[in-house]
Amino acid sequence: MNITQHTDYALRVLMYLGACPERRVTIKEVAERFDISRSHLMKIVTELVAKGFVDGARGKGGGLRLARAPSEIGLGDVVRQVEPSLALVECFGTQSHCVLDPVCRLKGALDGALQAFLAALDRVSLADLVGSDARLHAVLGLEPPGRQPLPVTILRQVARTKGR
Amino acid sequence: MNITQHTDYALRVLMYLGACPERRVTIKEVAERFDISRSHLMKIVTELVAKGFVDGARGKGGGLRLARAPSEIGLGDVVRQVEPSLALVECFGTQSHCVLDPVCRLKGALDGALQAFLAALDRVSLADLVGSDARLHAVLGLEPPGRQPLPVTILRQVARTKGR
DNA sequence: TTAAAAGAGTCAAATAAGATGAATCTTTTT
DNA sequence: AAAAAGATTCATCTTATTTGACTCTTTTAA
Image 1 (tube, rainbow over the protein chains, first blue to last red):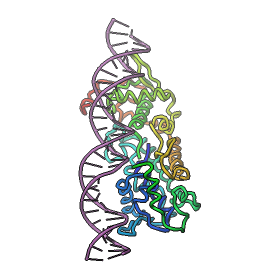
Image 2: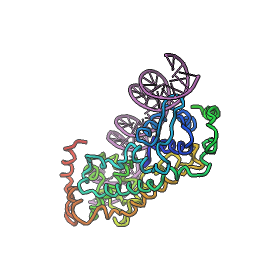
Image 3: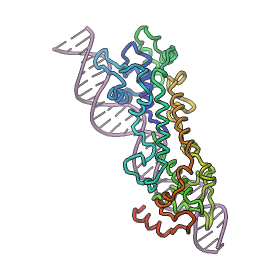
């Protein structure tokens, strides 16, 4: 059982944006920081924009920022909307092929567990993940909140050393 | 997010066995009833035997039966032991490649949700799934509890009509 | 008004996990 | 001994996911 990297990265992008509330962040910057391809990350971001989590601006000086306050972004919402499928087993779909289906209580049990899973995530917001201290900034190589823009050239060098 | 069919079938096999406490059931019979290949199902059963959920007997007159009472088999246990991986995201493993890892609270949130998921399953036993009524027997085409052995020839005919 | 920055979209390919089944081996009972 | 039944091994097929190149569109700043 796992969630897709797609969803995983979506959550991490939101964390990155939550850590930089004072400016717009470009996809390129995030891609280099996380060391993944820009094209790949683009799809994730595009979806986050479409689903209303992120506000994207085009053109020179554009970039990304959270569309809502971090405290208003629940992890459960993100997972529900971004994860491609929450059908734990085949029979969650419309037509099951299993002979047990008509009387099966397994489906109900699994669905209950799934709801418990999502409910646990609902209790956590992006604000909880980002926190108020500067540790996240430090790890991301960002300035403390309220300082100058990011020195992109340095980030590029960091990315180069791993080569991708 | 999904659990593997492997785990799904493991649970269904246990349900089948739970519905037939009075006799040993062969893998072939279960495979035909669920319309999946014997070889495939074999691996699932072998694992259930190795993990102590099922008691398998070889030789003529052999077959499968539950190794414990249905009320003593919790769904959480089964999922924990049978599902190949419960690492929701990459960073659950030993070495994460994510820059956020040292300060990441996402991992904790996801793990909390996973524990809630498993805890919900812990509250359900195989006995809860099988129930005391005859509905499961009916769907499986089995005799009501305490009657003669299953007419295998009929089951074979049923399986043939779908061809596999 | 034009060039550059940046996001959006399309397409195809590479991976890897999972699912599948054939063939053979081993054990046990009649 | 023979048949029944589970155990093991091996190879292949399938599919979701991951990946990234290439091109298009929008928008801002000079």
